Length: 504
Image (tube, rainbow, N blue to C red; front, side):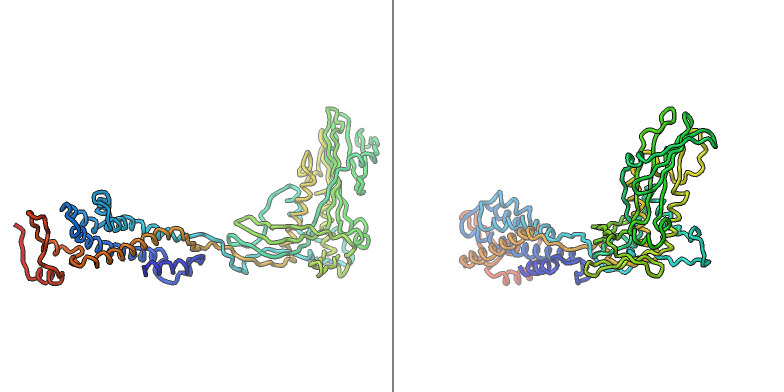
């Protein structure tokens, strides 16, 4: 019973703990196996001895078949003999001992089933687990001359790549550092971009003005203006060619200058996209005109997680930057933050915005595709947005790609998180301990009952399972009585040490 109590104490100590906290060199499983083997062996020793003693009481109380002697002897030796005993000898107190001998085979397996191991993710702070966020986009562009032309403002190739990836809907892996599985807890605000698109086909077509051109062959040129003020020019030649894609863009800073652009913030760019198909005479059908805008925005991210190459935020909230909190200071547009709203100050460089505007209004973006017998030479990125492409989705993707670049761009700050390590924990299933306790309890009941019964029969020597006691017994066939002149096992043992015998 003491070994079982020690086993329970070990289970109680290790319950819910990491396996790494096991304090000894011998493993937990090995320790449990050793203790359960000890419990089982101790139980078997006691039960075996008392079954052997009950054998003598069995024959003392009344005459029985002599082969019962063998049944008792087999029962005291192991499970197979005990199993035979249960079915071949009338039930008595020794039956409980035989039953315990059989069921003790389940003692060790049940006790070892108490311990199970679970893999849990453990949070470990790690300075190398990072992702970026930024409150500004300001590359400190250096201009060579005082009267430097706006069109010569140096470009940011990584921002250009982000724009192209978004317009072409190219998926890229998020930028973060994580050795496997990681988590970040908290909130972070980053400067970014937001898009908005709407179908303005009817409003724009109502402004259409067409004229016939003869300078370079007879054709028709039509101009129109979207509700946001972006002009569109398309052309067609009967039965020969027509414009089926046209995109134009305007930049507030280029169109209106610094002061007026400041008043229009957070909107910074406007776009107009014309798309159509031609009939057999190259007359436009299925005309679709969409206007979009790109604005400065802020995003509040709440908690993040990564696993392998995937990275995501639990919650992303877009924060509108409308409200007149913008100012122009030291070559940057600045948005005043608010501690009460947990909103940091944000800034965008003048020349960085100029460079971005130069690219978005360049022939790369502002372009046309003419279908038919026409030599296209300035189609730029028209293939990305022509046809039935979801323009709203593509501009959203472009704004998100640009935001991701700023988040890990030249002005980024680092958010550190925690590494998720898989660690083995010990779980205890107490229900499996019921069996060992029942077996151990049954053993104690059997021992106590055997002691009481043996004390009541004072005329039976304490021979237990001794083979010498059998040799000392004699059997009178006439009376059917079995008796022995040796009453003390100590004397029988001493006499056996002085006696020599040989089987003939």
